[in-house]
Image (cartoon, helix red, strand yellow):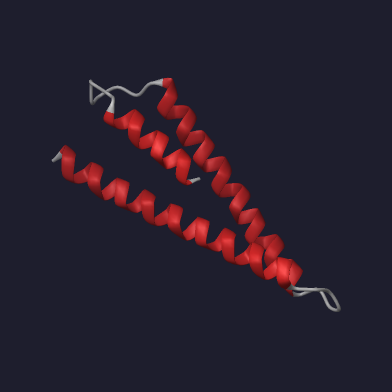
Length: 90
């Protein structure tokens, strides 16, 4: 996910005309949405693993922790990007 945001930042920095979107950015956006959806599914599976009786819960805890951190970090990066885009455009 972090690599995807770095690629998106490089694509945005290399863009000459600020009014145009090109297929690379669209592909990065769609990929980010799909990865966030997969992380949300991973949060659900981690929660489900925690509520199963008589099983080892370490993988559920690890999955829930990593996917929650990924979702939270992605949301924070997206919010920073939106705020930065609004500052630059004004």
